[in-house]
Amino acid sequence: MSAVLSVRNLSVALPTGADRALAAENISFEVNAGEILCLLGESGSGKSVISFAVMGLLPDNVRVSAGEILLGNENLLTLSPAALRGKRGDDIAMVFQEPMTALNPVMTCGDQLDELLAEHTQLSANERKAKTLAMFEAVKLPEPDRIFSSYPHQLSGGQRQRIMIAMALILEPKLLIADEPTTALDVTTQAEVLALIKTLQRERGTAVLFITHDMGVVAEIADRVVVLQNGKQVEAGTKDQVLRQPREAYTRMLIASVPGTEPPAEGITHDGAALLSVVGLGKTYSSGGWFQKKRITEAAKGVSFTLHPGETVGIVGESGSGKSTVARCITRLIDPTIGDMQLGNTRLDGVSRDSLKLARKRIQIIFQDPYRSLDPRQRVGEAIIEGPLNFGVSRNSAMARARDLMNLVRLSPDVLSRYPNEFSGGQRQRISIARALALDPEVLICDEAVSALDVSVQAQVLKLLEEIQAKLNLAILFITHDLRVAAQICDRVLVMRRGEVVEQGTARDVFITPKHAYTQRLLASAPGRGFEFATQTTSGHL
Image 1 (spheres, rainbow, N blue to C red):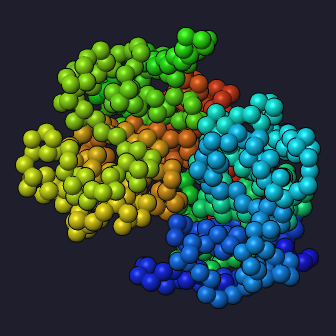
Image 2 (image 1 turned 90 degrees about the horizontal axis):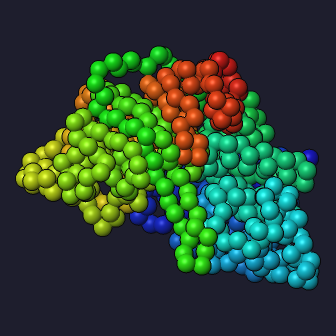
Image 3 (image 1 turned 90 degrees about the vertical axis):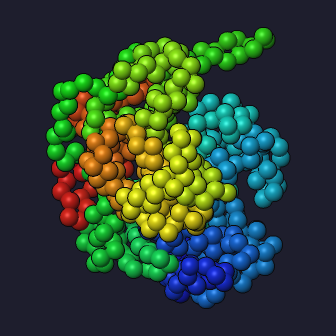
């Protein structure tokens, strides 16, 4: 079988002054027609750099220093910029990780595909629209006519990703590059997108280069796997060879970091007084003006639960289920419409925000993206001491506490003088944890706090949270759409759908014997569920 894509001894040089000289070093692999090859590795392993090199989209200060990239028998590295532009879309297409940044926000979805067809084909306007609508149907978008005239912000994350896939496939390229296309998606939407890529690839015979750090996705979709570490190729083989019989220690470490969907043991039972009590919490939004029909959206409805010291309660569900709305109501970042919220003996609802100042000291929140939640112009030390200074702690005492917190989250106190952009994603999340702990909170809310992290870094942060909880007797409200993470860290779990809690109980009850059909569907959609990884058993894992 002749290869559609052949990467031979590829090396990509980084700018002078970077942490290392090469982003990718001596990489070789092939992707055949009708085959899915996964590039697997953590952030910084060189996965995306390789894909950008294939597409000819490397930044000006990053260059291919050695090797060949062959599409069929043609070396893409020898083509002129104009010739390479001609290859994009016709022969090579790419689906990016975040469709909201890849799509043009001021163009309708139909116009974005029409622009592509107008550039690369001689079709008339009517023919282009018909082809676009047919492609929307092929990627299973609902109401293609409505989608055609909709803007990206009017669609869900899964629908936006389907638009990206439609754009990539409409010219029937020989090679599709998918760069982390499901990382930010809910488990059910992720399963649908993976199934869609597999179906279209099989029907059209497309070669797919799939880039991911998610072992479950690899188990679900790959034919062959190439494992990368720090820009080097450490292992390659079929999916079964790499995931079931890994030769290299790095691959075994990645596999060992994959959490299962079976809780490791029965969670701790807390019979004492609840630290946080939420009863009948609801949040309603209304939209529409003078000339529009008023629309009511219940983002949260009748949510009730308790949280005890030293306990971790998880809230799981898809995007739009109301998880983050509940967290923001509890912290009063938004005001609830109805419901009672108590932190010990302190009311959190029905009082002014000014009167909540002392209560807010007792509840802290960690967000999903630490790079966005940390001020890029503020040194790490200043970010951590800002809260204590606002509560009257002296600067010297606050900075001494910040140094202690750096040791607690396993970073050197020397990093306090550095800026957020000087750290990896995992390190920035550790800094965010330290900042949240600076006020000695009793309740820590983690809102998708590990969903953007590599599997090994995720495992480290989860272990760190567990150790900090044991040491400080923290109560943790853990919000996530990743069922595997929830299974490993939570004592009790609430499952939310469309603003309501449809099931709750101990982690073992919810994950091993789910009662509600929605919970069962979530668990069945977990990528790689049932695949037997090396060192794992089939019982309950993934």
